[in-house]
Amino acid sequence: MISYMQIENLTKSFGDLVLFENISFGIGEGQRIGLIAKNGAGKTTLLNIIAGKEGYDSGNIVFRRDLKIGYLSQDPVYPEELTVLEACFYHGNALIELIKEYEHVMEMEGHPGLDAILARMEQEKAWDYERKAKQILSQLKIRDFNQQIKQLSGGQLKRVALANTLITEPELLILDEPTNHLDLDMIEWLEGYLQRSNISLLMVTHDRYFLDRVCSEILEIDNNSLYSYKGNYSYYLEKRQERVDATNTEIDRANNLYRTELDWMRRMPQARGHKARYREEAFYELEKVAKQRIDNSKVKLEVKASYIGSKIFEADHLYKSYGDLKILSDFSYIFSRYEKMGIVGNNGTGKSTFIKILLGEVLPDSGTIDIGETVRFGYYSQEGLQFDEQMKVIDVIQDIAEVIELGNGKKLTASQFLQHFLFTPETQHSYVYKLSGGERRRLYLCTVLMRNPNFLVLDEPTNDLDIVTLNILEEYLQSFKGCVIVVSHDRYFMDKVVDHLLVFNGNGDIRDFPGNYTQYRDWKEVNEQKEKEAEKPQEDKNSRVRLNDKRKMSFKEKREFEQLEKEIAELETEKSTIEGALCSGALSIDELTEKSKRLPVINDLIDQKTMRWMELSEIES
View 1 (cartoon, rainbow, N blue to C red):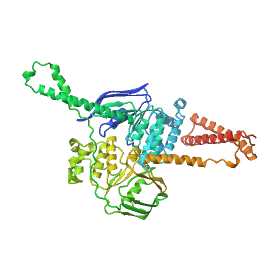
View 2 (cartoon, helix red, strand yellow):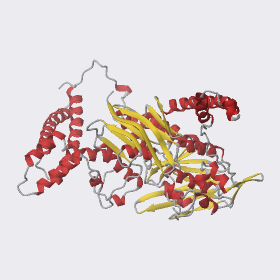
View 3 (cartoon, one colour):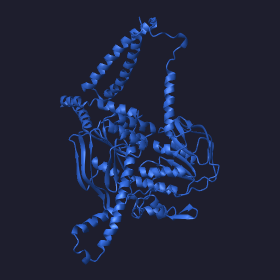
View 4 (cartoon, rainbow, N blue to C red):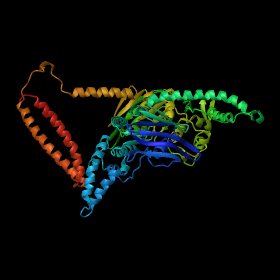
């Protein structure tokens, strides 16, 4: 296996906080590695270091010479005035710089050095670059190439950045939370794309299905050290537990021996003056092992929900549109007690608008919503993650309440409550601006749940949370004595939490599905297959033709056959002409764009007409 990158004894810290120390690993051709760690352990920092966007304290990083690396950051940023297509050319690489050089030469009088540029363009296949960009953008459902970046939603921006990364055809692809802000169709498209490609991959993601299906190796940062597991996510879970059990056994043995050795060390200096020096040194090594702790602490969400009555909410004949875009069309629904609903659908189909109508933040065009008197909403939104950067973590919580009621006379102080969310006393007195993205999400979740709601509305709660936190949040929601609505693109999370789905198909078409996401996906695939089969022309049972029977071509079919031969020949000629023009280097950008759009259309027409010609050619004339 060809080595692409090798990291040796890498250490990174921020002041007194050590993220990782003396870690070493390599990435070779064809390896697909998922990186797992708790929030704040340095996952994004490590990816930024590898991508050259951040420094490190010590160690070595060696790349194979001329290695092509593609990096998708967690929150990509582009100048707002750029168009979608311009954004795909924004982050420079050698190929893009070559195209820019060609455009510069074409603008100069006499086109100096044009022949040399054309030869390099031909060698690097630069003519295909814009076409590839448009193809991938189209597959990612971005079809308005002239739309400005500032007009894009978060999901659209993520797809543009993804296209920007993929069109360079990197040998090593580094992805930081690639599924964030992508809808389910796009996540499954990316999953399939990566499964089919031979690309090497280093990825951070909380999407456990994605991790399980795409990666064949897991790296885990734990207690400043790095552990490697040669298998997918399911294999990792099994082997990690074995590692934890083995380490705990080793700590128990060390503790037993430590007590004996400590008694020896506490004796008078005279008593051990003649003892071997090596035993004293061994004691300090033993002490390190005995004082180890496997941090399996979990986010314990034990806040008791307040009482909720039998009447929750009733939606009656709701309508909502924005211009020609229908969100709700005659929507009625009665929510039941303890119901756990998942909401799925592509971006732009109205999921978040529906939530805001329910919460009273947006008014419907017509219809009514009747909320029960006992309902107390807890709303976790994408826009709600706003804190005073100069506040301490403990102050954020104490501004809401000094004490949290748990029921049955039990209480927790704000500090105790934060410790349930893995905020150590040191972190509690740290400032908000020092928290990682995932730690901020955890703090925000804490502020929502501590208000003791009985109806949780969670809009994309899984973004940026680590897998440990997700597991405990899932367990909490499963036993939550209240109502839950979850809008999420995390399939694993939805499978574990919800009882049924509201599927937003767009244009006001909303369907209720009685099951989780995997069940819905299976049903959808079966249904789509049935529809395809139904569209096929059905054989008339009363007029079956034996396989050996031959029929004559009708007059109409003869005319069609002759016309097809002529049309295919014309299309082949046009295709050759366009391919020659694209390789000539003499086209303007507008002409290049026009012909790049035409070429795939011609290929599709040739395929369709050739298939029909072959069908007719099997009939006797």
